[in-house]
Image (cartoon, rainbow over all chains, first blue to last red; front, side, top):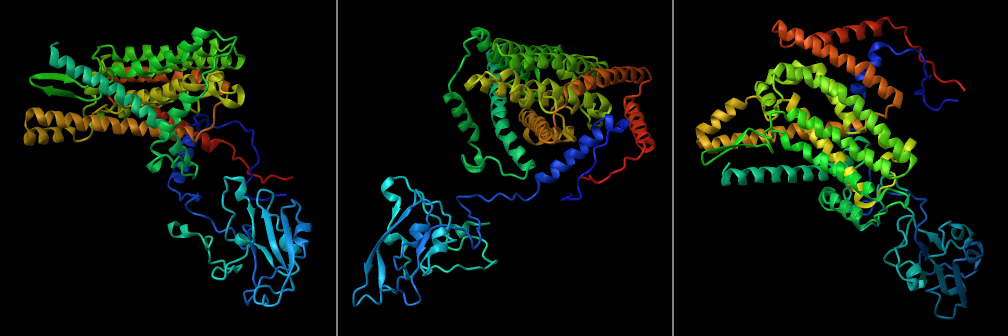
Length: 187
Length: 384
């Protein structure tokens, strides 16, 4: 099998005089490395410039609201069951009268917590969810935490804000993570 | 020598010392940057603008590491090793003429640490002593790999010093003096630079300089794959730093010696015209001093180019095998340098300055005919 056409058979023929003088080959090699000196470097300067990781990147969790702004989650617990790291826990509650604007289903999650130290970002919760409520967003990562009391994310940090709706754009034109404020610093 | 002259001289010596250290420090930065650029990377760019404070960070790291001496090592020799390396590396730059001369109040002081009439011999003596640092360090470590590295360093340096010396002899024959000042003065016009009169000698000298500095492709004493770092396997902290640092100082000194011996030292094309124009417009003393400064600048440009060349070659060529190294040294370079001496001597006898080009022409013709006559190598794609 051949993957590229660049492989050459090793030859054990005796070297010619020019080859034994090394110098032509050395000059050739120096020219090759010098041509690389002026090439554009592919490095992405990470903390300043962030690369677009594609629409399938699994980042920060988000609890989706539907089109009318109601929470989709019905606290069925399938995500918690599916979670291999046992990072998700929730407390279910029944929707009372007057809360129809807040919750789509009759049962909702009063408490929904994800332990970000446990989470392995496998996306199984996303797959398990029958209500399309939990997603791992492709454009935002979980921020660095330094204290243990910062690692359990409750509904306040998971449910998406009305003014910051999450859409999974599949747009090849987008070259950097769209919500990064540092996008302007990209080259 | 009166007081003013003494002060100027000590200032020059201090400046040379400081500049040597500074250049060696920033060579480490340049090495990493050049390596990165040749490999399509960016290199250190976090510490300060463009990563310019990286050498400081490295130095702090070196100093804060544990200074470890193995229990079975010979303690004093273990400490003396890196010191010797550093000492010999720093001594060599004393005789290099960095510029013409500075005129001050009727005094004329050469921009040179010490003017000795055996400058070339001095440099060779000091450079040869450099191998003691590696030997002592490698032996004192009480480690087989270190000892092997040290032995390799010693035999490599001795082998290549022979052809180094021979290639110099051709220059000495043409100049008739061992003084570096004289050798530089001989190369005042551009086409009389020794690189043009001694092309073969230059190539041999350059190759041997690489071997003397233990730089790739001749860095067998410290090759990681075979010897786990060679003579500095057991070293840590600033002792290791001294070894690495002395390598960069050696590189600077070699570049300076190459520029001095083969590239006209502080001379540059159009030098007389610049000097005359400056003395005409600024007055004899000030004009002369400014012209000297430009000369120093031209020498340093050459030195920086050669330091860059050292790095360029390091990130281009793989390491030689040890038998290839010895074959190249004993079977190719020494006969060639002897031939170079003979041809140069014949050229001097018949007053042909560019006689050594004959060898180059013959070698090129031989190589070309041999390459044409050689059976074509069939390139067959690998089957599997």
